[in-house]
Image (cartoon, rainbow, N blue to C red; front, top):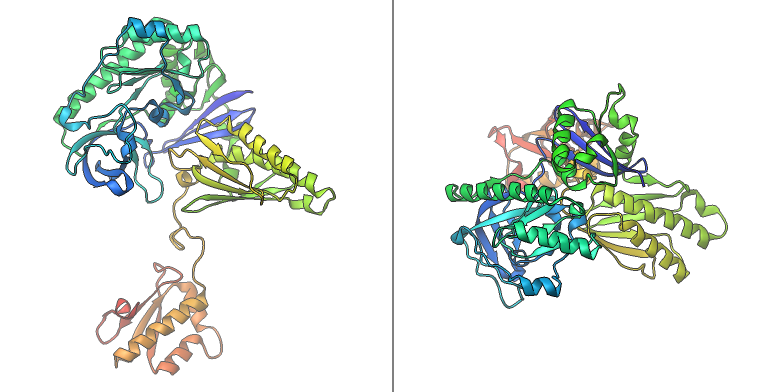
Length: 536
């Protein structure tokens, strides 16, 4: 598989595309308004403790308090997947017997005891809640960015990610990425890290550390420890809530976490960014510097690589399949629903086989679209009905195979009797759709507004309540321009009918600032807005 990283930089935005065999597989967007937050460390204050949901809300200076689940207060290497790039999320912490006999496990306490929650060796049980109180100061790190009305998710298990290692200041374990399968190499890396790791610190050895020289690992570790010492000093001088460490930008983190031997080249259209990336790679992987290219073409870089078209598709509800079928992707507050349709296949013979072909193609495209759009949470897929259980199994196996390419954690359940697949995908950041868009100011993101007839009915009910309580007969009605023409159309207009029915004089006024389904009534006598007085 040919893998490339293409970077497009403008004055206000940087877009990083990862392509596989010429097709867009992942897209990252960075702008001043939407900076990467995962990995940032805050000194916060406990705002609320809610044992009922086994969580606490932490004030870190944002509009919404951060969510800290009790399970994120304990020591577990599994919690670092969001911070270090998911390909290194699965780690092996088992030591061989020879090493366990030779070396005792060191211990270490947090540098600022009053500000760090004491941890336990195992997960928090339902009956045993951590000692966390309202008003307590605590150090937390962002693991998931805000989505919709939900704030960021945080953990008290702080870590600092480098190119080859992840430093864990409050965890004394040493883990090795399970993608390093060679036992001798695992042992070598563990011994190197243990010899250079300060007492009380823990570390995760990343996949890219395989076959690397000891000096490179030592240099990476020294850089991480230096960062941590600076954080310790900042903690002592800050008052919560405060940001005490800002992680790398999206571009830097992508190069750090994803630029590995299987990437054929990195192409950048910015001279400044090209120089910065080359300097970094020259330090961490000198043998890969030649893979970094500066794009000199006149055509926009994303157009030249065919990426812009794929981005347009990723923002669309409808995605066509080569067979003539298509999928519809609908995002809701609770889940994402995907519908598979056969298109022109529907009229052909051999319905079961045609349904299988379309479903298999759809399964591949769905896995790609979820990864590309970075959609997380619960996903329900309504495949075309199939009667043969073997065919359902084939579609299920195809989904599982395609999701192996995904760095996020994905769980897929077998297809139900109605050919429905249930999927959960790890959510770390906002989806691409949210990165490029914002809620519609007219419909509020719902996609629908009240019909003009319904709005007029609302106006009539308002007038009825007004007449029951007031003897005034002169009003000014402000509505959206599109509703003005609707109220005035006809030989005897709807507005005239309302005035005759309720014996009122209503002066109709345009107000473009109002929504299509909004209206405001002003009393001429009182010279003020009285709409809310008669609303329910």
